[in-house]
Length: 270
Image (cartoon, rainbow, N blue to C red):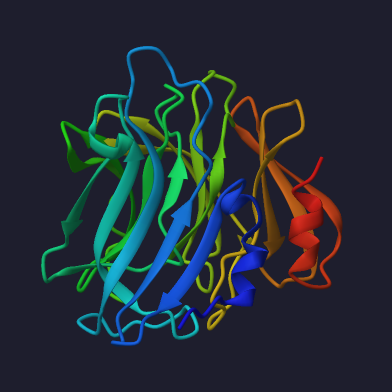
């Protein structure tokens, strides 16, 4: 039986142009799947294009529960649009995490984090002793491989909530924004991919995008012509804020009083 969490519709730009659904099957198996439309034209020389990603194999090996009953997951799989002479026109890959890791997320996102126009797969991983980190995967040679990660937060039961992708520092390359420990530290962090690491560009305290128990992540990233802006709430949830970088320094602009999750959706439209 298909169970669509209505709250996931409030994810905003965190899954811009992507559909996200939660399913429960008659045998009790469950998964969260994210998909986006296949492009009409793909970059020359890059035939493989991820179009969907799925978290599956719910597990209880990590007891942290901040997402309102959404389980932690043990496996990730990706379907990609392949070259014309590939069987059925599709390819893909998947992996299972080792016993000390889980996926702790509302879904795996299809975001271009390298700037080559091709989506990577971005998801929160959590270590049973070290807490969460943000990881980007990519498909290479028919296998799903880890491209780059942040460091772990460093303590169990500590989590981060992704926001979105945009060019925050004006270098022409995509950056990823997320909130580090949205219930505790409440820090917006901006990172960029450098080799196998997601390297911190900026960090600013006093903002959040998630309340404990919500089965969705609020906020996102928009670009209204002047670079990336993170749409978040103040730490006390009183104000909606657009956060941007100006020559490396964070600037926060109030968008008005925060009244509910729908405010994020409106704010993400320029």
